[in-house]
Length: 115
Image (spheres, rainbow, N blue to C red):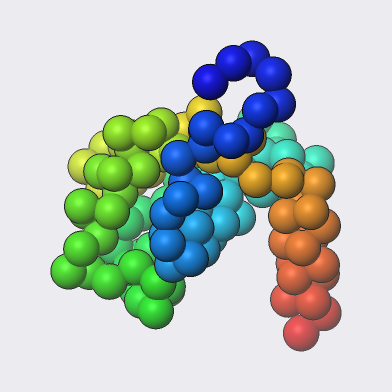
């Protein structure tokens, strides 16, 4: 891939809808907190893979979770912080239209805070 915005080589574009949805869920947990000004304050978001499997069991089955995460790690969408915690990899930061996802997650956060 070149340094330009040529996204035709992004491997996740050929992945299944389920895998792309998984990446968006990971973006929301690992990238959104970094770009949201009221949350960012020097933290490096992580997510525990057990919590990921429990909270999003429709998208991350425990049976193939580790294999799926290893796949994402091999392409640098995520990185293992420890055996059970992951952080965003370089590609997760730029794999999607951050402006659109940011707005979507910010609206969801506002709705959640109102409840």
